[in-house]
Length: 291
DNA sequence: CCACGATCCTGCTAGC
DNA sequence: TGCTAGCAGGATCGTG
Image (cartoon, rainbow, N blue to C red; front, side):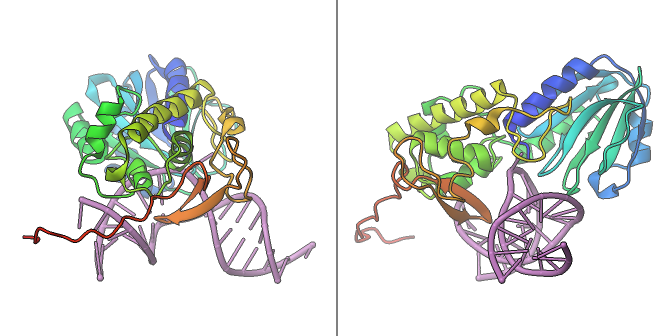
């Protein structure tokens, strides 16, 4: 569910509410698979009594930095929410982890589908390895046309598949991939290495625009996403592509009916006129034999 | 290297 | 009304 803007919004809320507080207890673990490299008792032993020093976002991960360099990495996958609540407020259904801080302040991981994961890192090096294997650059940190062109060079896949690949760029998901491709006028199935220089430049600026605006609006809530305070975002009212194909709504730029296609088990929404499919390449005889 | 399907889960809804 | 198939903002793994 959450993509970069939703995770960033949550990180900001958690930062303002939790940084500086001492963790008193880890509890509420009722789904061990949520902790692939630790356990409830281990988390409690490792974190109890330690102060939360910072909350960061990297891709779609939330990083909680505790005293003595211990780090928790949280990924919400499709349906997870992280809620800051007073300890006397009733527990939300599907709560699978509770971090109890001082001053009766709790951080609750609420996740109906149980896809969310929490990773424990004993030191920065372990986190660096984990991130290095999974995440590419941050799209809001210096994604110029030149930089994107460099990333695309030699990649043979379809552009939308690449945008969804977290090792290519970290943080883009199905909503913002569709939004950025529509904004840039690029069909989701276009071959990544066939984009023109102008298209790459439009895509880079579209990615920055779409993500930046969504952060300003505190994320997209069309269903279950809530921020750290339990509040909805506002970006759902501003989506221009995602979801429009399901009912063939008109393109806001040209009026054509939106369409959908399926790519890697995901639905893509696009305007067939503003995002034309690639021209079929003329068959060219191969002159050089493959070696 | 790249594409695709299956898998992990529960809740919601369109359609019968 | 009630049931059910299909789909959902993610990511990984195995196969071809």
